[in-house]
Amino acid sequence: MVTHVTSREMCVLEGLCLGNADERNNFPGIGEKTFSDMIEKGWIENTNPDERSGTVGIRLTPLEDKVFTEAAERGVQPLRWRRR
Image (cartoon, rainbow, N blue to C red; front, side, top):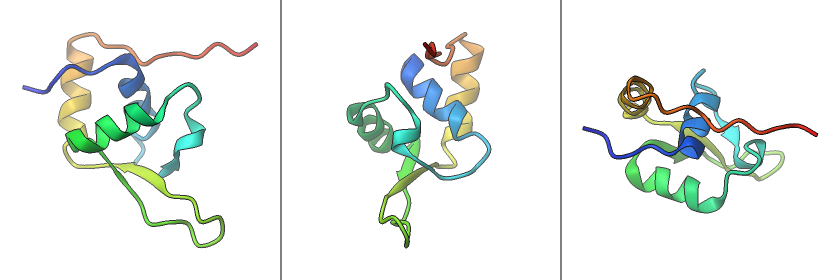
């Protein structure tokens, strides 16, 4: 059984579901605590720094598939941000 998944965590999982690494700043409204909690749970991991920009990205771990599936079955929806 997977621990509780928040809507913010689900937003990150859905955003990374294609298997691509992404930068944290591409997830507006998602704070460092959410990312660090997800890393601690083993759902995502940091990537190597980009050679050009020096930024560290994030990507999913193999455990994510189980987390995402169980959360979706329980009806957890990704947080949706409204554009103004």
